[in-house]
Length: 195
Ligand SMILES: CC(C)(COP(=O)(O)OP(=O)(O)OC[C@H]1O[C@@H](n2cnc3c(N)ncnc32)[C@H](O)[C@@H]1OP(=O)(O)O)[C@@H](O)C(=O)NCCC(=O)NCCS
Image (cartoon, rainbow, N blue to C red; front, side, top):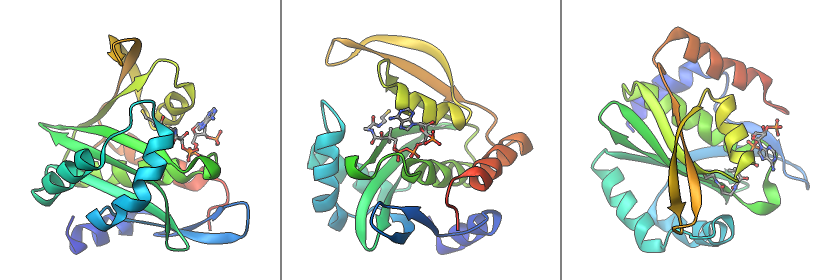
């Protein structure tokens, strides 16, 4: 993402940084592009977040493709420490969210919401028409997060995970619409503890 496009998007946001109740003290949460140097902090989160975590080389491949413009990955930091990350692949007119994960000790404080806000604004900026993703059928917490962002279930991929668990396919359409922009602004306004 160019500095200009980030600037333009940030203009539409109510703020660029927020404070999050991290259980110790209130520190500003910042979101920035993911880089290879972040992987040593990302991997411990990834390993606890998923039954079948990505390997470091999957992240490296994704970052190589980010450099060519077909991916967008972000990290969330508090006090300089990575507390979450997420990203998406641009395919035709849809942004496929591939990964969203938050440090288990810092969940339920709005960090994934912040990452999703950045990803959704960025996908709009990139001219995408829709967002889509797969989520484990049993992962009701993530489904609830995605529903808030306008995702609706459209189908099931049977035995998608570990050849055992079904995936729910979710889509969020018309993200260029004014209604979707209003939804993102409402989420920004409603998030708890926003500074
Ligand atoms: C899913 C995940 C990213 C959410 O991160 P988070 O920072 O805790 O999410 P937020 O605090 O922004 O929560 C946003 C909303 O999601 C829903 N949600 C999140 N965690 C939830 C939980 N444990 N139970 C029920 N709802 C939950 C709620 O609606 C919540 O809003 P609320 O707190 O105002 O009620 C995190 O639980 C995680 O890393 N899970 C493991 C990795 C994963 O499953 N990623 C999704 C892959 S598809």
